[in-house]
Image 1 (tube, helix red, strand yellow):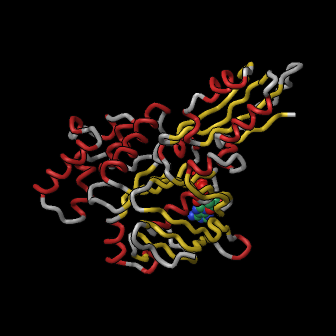
Image 2 (cartoon, rainbow, N blue to C red):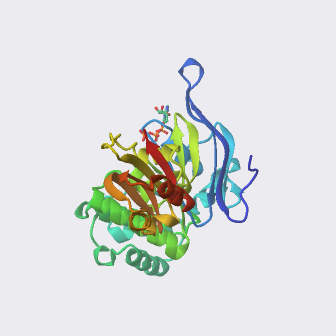
Image 3 (cartoon, helix red, strand yellow):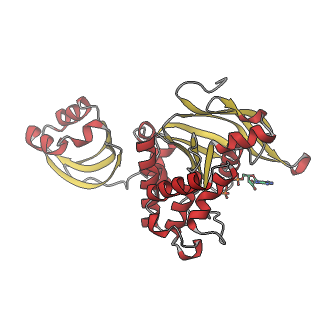
Length: 335
Ligand SMILES: Nc1ncnc2c1ncn2[C@@H]1O[C@H](COP(=O)(O)OP(=O)(O)OP(=O)(O)O)[C@@H](O)[C@H]1O
């Protein structure tokens, strides 16, 4: 159990439990969830509808009060706060939403200026900061437009600019790309990744989309019926075929019946060795005939992870398998 956030940890959630209602009607939305979000990382909470994701993220800024458990954000236990202290702590936690939550009667610039007004920035300081923020999200030309005049992706950029107005310690993202088409989703995720890399922004996001985790998350926790069933670095989990993450990223390949004289082999790549010309080495060194049947290899940062299925024919089959294993690859011969 982690007692408090320190040093390189931005958010620590310990034994978080949230029960809605009472007695027979009680719903346990979160059941002893613990996790740590390192400073400067993007942490994804992945789960299906009803898993408890929204409840979890809303507990982090106390929009929802935990039933029990503790939450430290930048070394401060926010579960003990109320009134002014809570309002101040919330200013250090930015949030973006699935449906953007912009004020339709205000221009883009005035939406972004809104939290700065609440924080007491002067008019001149607000104008300067809004200009910087709109430039940061690529919307400096649309300052005087109204939300209804923007596309979904542009609205989310405004949401991001507004969330970053007070230079928060952490950005919470509540399904921020779920209402967007795939191309716009990609560009919003790129923006979040860019902000993470350039400013060291810590991001805690919830999503039901594996693609979001794959594109930008360093770590992931998988939530099912209020419990975390798996947690870790995305690249580590993806490289372990038995993990839930790997199983949903790389569905079990089709099973093939080998041609007479051939063997079907599944090779799992986990990182560094996926860039090596493994197959051409095999063919040259062991005089094998290799017929590729299928595969699914994904890129995680600069690592490649996935599986390849191929039919091997040749006298030196066993030596070829030993060679693959010596490279650190996992090899299965289908029987
Ligand atoms: N205010 C509430 N009152 C009662 N039950 C609630 C409330 N909010 C959420 N729940 C219940 O808690 C459980 C978790 O809901 P939550 O919205 O956190 O899940 P989720 O993973 O975010 O799902 P979705 O993506 O559909 O929003 C569900 O059973 C839900 O019906």
